[in-house]
Each structure stands twice: as C-alpha cells, then as structure tokens.
Image (cartoon, rainbow, N blue to C red; front, side, top):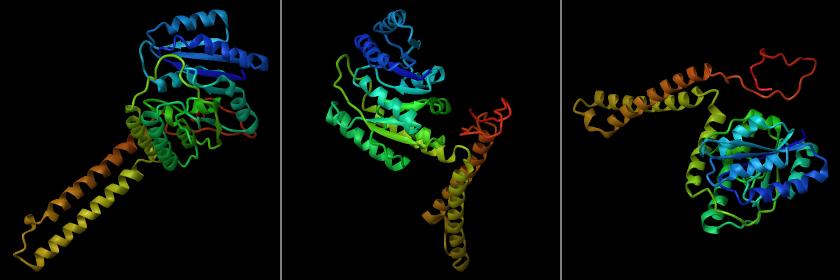
Length: 324
C-alpha cells in the first residue's frame, strides 16, 4: 500500500463526513493505493457511528475505537502498529489541517528521501495569548534542546516512512516530540513544509494550557532517555561521584581545621552538615545508577535498533534483536 492516513479524534462528529469526502476528492484522482484510519479516542458524541457509516460507503476507511479517552499519543501509537502504507501521514480531524497538503508530503518522503516531514503552520488562526505565544516559546526550547531545526514540533500534519513509526513508541504526551524520538532512534533525514492552517469550523479545542507543563516534563524525559536510557550509570555515577568527592573534600578541610585547632567545633559549622548531606546524596545517586544499570541490562529492548541496509546477509528471524 502506498499511503496510510492516520486521524486521531475525540468528539468530531460534525467534521468527519466532510474530511473523509475531501480526502477522497484529493487522493482518488492520483491513483494511490491508500487507507484512512480514524482512531476514536473515547468520543461520546456519535463519532464512531459516523466512522462506521463511512466504512460501509468506502472500504478504504478503517477505524480503531478506545473504550475511553487515553490521549493522542495512545491513539497514534496504536494506529502506527496497524497501518500498511509505505508512507504514513497524520492529521487532525477538526479540518484545521488541509488534505490538499497530503500529496506533497507523500512526494517529499518518497522522492526526496526524507524519513519524516513535519508541517509548519506559519500563519495560525489560534488565540494569540493562550496558544500562539506559548507555542512559539515551546518550539524555541525544543529546537534548542533537541538540535532539530523545526519551527512547529506540535503540528499534527506530518508524514513518515512506515519504518519510522514502527521503530518508535509514543506514550504520555510524547506525540509532540515524535521528531525528537525519531532522531534518537537514528532517523536524521527530517524535513519541514509550510502548510495551511485553517480556522476551526466545528467544536472546540481539546487541549488546555496544562499541555505546556506536561510537554516540558516529557521533553526532559525524552532528552534524558535519549542520552542515558541505555547507559544510566554514566549520568548517576558521574553526578554521584562529584557529590561524594565534594563532600569528602569539605570533610577533609574540617578535619584538618580540627587537628590544627583543638578548640575548633566541627558540629557548630554549617559546612559539616553540608558535607554529610552531599556525601549521602552522592552515595544514593551512585546506588541509583547501579539499580538503573540492572534494569537496563535486563530490559527486553536493550539492543533495539534499526538496520538501514543489508548486503549479502539474510534477515534471520530471532537472531538479531533489533526492530526490522
């Protein structure tokens, strides 16, 4: 199959028929073998019934339904496990993403060799205070930390090679950081395309300001796991050793002062308690590193990786532990 379009949604009953018809109008003349996968993330407004009717009218339409609302990351992760297209395009169901952008995103992946192409909504129709300004700050921080020169990490309109979405795992609020996850997984051909952002036609936004707090915490998690997920001792051991040595040096200074002046009272010095605290923290971090190493060494995905090409070697099932 050429193309899979993944559309996570919650309570978008008004927009689904229009979106499905628009996609059909854009893609059918191009002769692509494609599927449209709607993921109903716990809708309560009849969205699933609409998806069922769309499926009856068009076999290219497929659907996944969650028992309750699990979030966009869970919806994307489950759909990524089921898609069959060589190129996977994600978009929102609220008609703010234009299906007219899909063919060019598909072309950039297939012909220009990108692993991932992210949309950039240069002109937005969202509220300036509650969405636009926080989004610019969020993107600037993510761009600086990740080293990926994208302007709009959170744009729902993206295109991927299928092997990219099958290699990464998305959970929590990490759908915002799929380019970062892809980079850490070894996919570095990441591009960007300016896309049209349309004003919301039906319903209301499902995301509040808390997404920025959760997003920052998830970014810290991704950066830490990306750098130290397979080698946690290099983080905990380094800082634990520095803390312990710092406390030891302070203690040495205090003991030397006591030896030179018998009237010197160690317990009356704040540095005494600081040294003890720093040494204890150092020991705890060092032990945490050992425990993390034990967990990492026994994890089932400890040798997970993506193989780019093989020359003269068969892909022996069960012999190589990496994802293929």
